Image 1 (cartoon, rainbow, N blue to C red):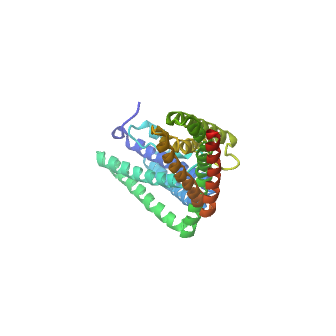
Image 2: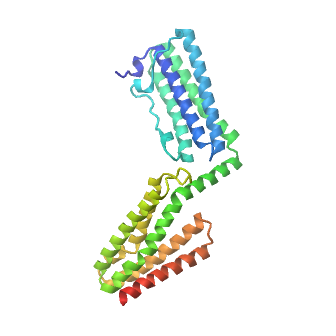
Image 3: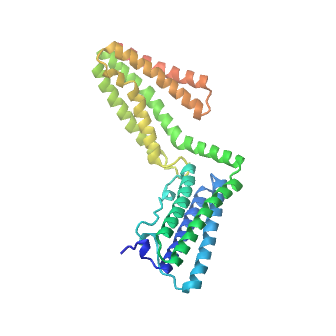
Length: 319
């Protein structure tokens, strides 16, 4: 049966604090281990925080032995109703730098607030004093995190890690999404406009475009997800890449499909052509922004390819 904090003895409360310090130390050590390759400065920060958690654990153990001896009761967070629950972000295959830093800040803040609140509710003076000390320790942890960040995350180190985070984002999200957007925006032009000019019907063009866009999204998503598990290339989880690629492909095709919901064929075609121009410009901008491709060069390449596919569709549909 789970206990409330108010039901714990002084020994159990101290044992719970020790267990809490041990688990937080393991979490920080895991963060450091997982981020050491791509973000060494941040890993050094978490190494320092793990060392401090171990030091505080030693102080708490020494206090417990002086008051209660060497027999430590087994107490965990799961044994106390309402105690802290950590979000297991460290289980993610690809830890994001901002998520890890935010999680660490939340951990220290929650622990400090919990101990302070528990101290206010305690009626036993020794327990109140102990919980108050724990709250102060957690507040020092927050200050320690700031000091370690200042020591290890210099301006140059932060710039290097931000650049690494950008490279990872481009590799795992932007590249598969861009591949999907290009395929969805360009490859669906021919079937959609061929159907439009062959039938002169907005409804028929919409049906063909809807089928082509969704089908292409499923196909590209599966292809991307099954092409590489990311273990060697570091391109990230295949499911995430597959979803990014598949959704972007479908969006690219649906962009110039939706105008054919307009009943008047020529009005719908003009709007669809305008949407195609926006899509091609968006692709060129993305290549310039994230792939370091000169914007003019990217625009010419994409527009030329798009116009060729569009002309092919119109020619076949009109013949």
